[in-house]
Length: 332
Ligand SMILES: [Zn+2]
Image (cartoon, helix red, strand yellow):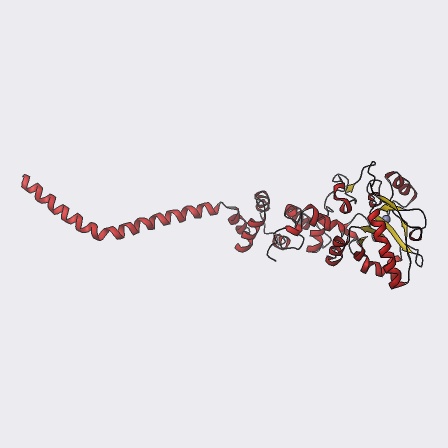
């Protein structure tokens, strides 16, 4: 009996040793294959729950779904998914020149309810400057620490105590009555006036410059309220705004059509000024076109605003509030 057992043991040992040699490779391969399939299945299950997959299932091409996930915050992705529809403007919006990521939901909401046929550029600009929000309830104090670039408009205001700390008086040949403005404005106007006179033979004059909060109360009471800023919301309180016409063309509404008015549109940025309320962009602002109202912002910013054809409100939203000059560009 003992011998029989030993014989069987020997036979079994030979068989297993021999088969192990042949089975080792395919068995290991099969095990790895099973493991790989399991990992892939798990990945598939996890992917199904990802926002990229959920966005893709809304009808966005996979490349667009990836782009959206790369650009949007998780909260914005969730909000996009909750819409349960493929929004045709989602991708054009994030590739737009002045796209601000925080405004993504508002661009889409604006487009959804817009009945005016606003273009993509209009949607971006209107939302960036806050025109989609109620002006009264969304007004905020102006950040006066920005100096020459402080923003005062229908949504940013100065309190009654704000007074510029560097006021100078214009020379007599620059204004009809005693007028003051920030000293940088007074200095820059001299260069602007000289150049305009040399090139157009017209002599520019400042009609109004710095106005205190109290002055603005008087101006507001005396004039048509459609064209005069509510006290606190006037740029004239900053000391960086001036109203300009010429001795040859003192009428302010048609000043933009005079040769010096045209020259101002084309050249005032060379002296640090911008036409604050341009004709084509009045729908972006609380104020209508004012060819006479100039704002000093310094030559670098004035050049950028002129070259890019944007308003100061758009500039402020994109380049100052958002720091768009350092933003990572989206693939356009
Ligand atoms: Zn003005």
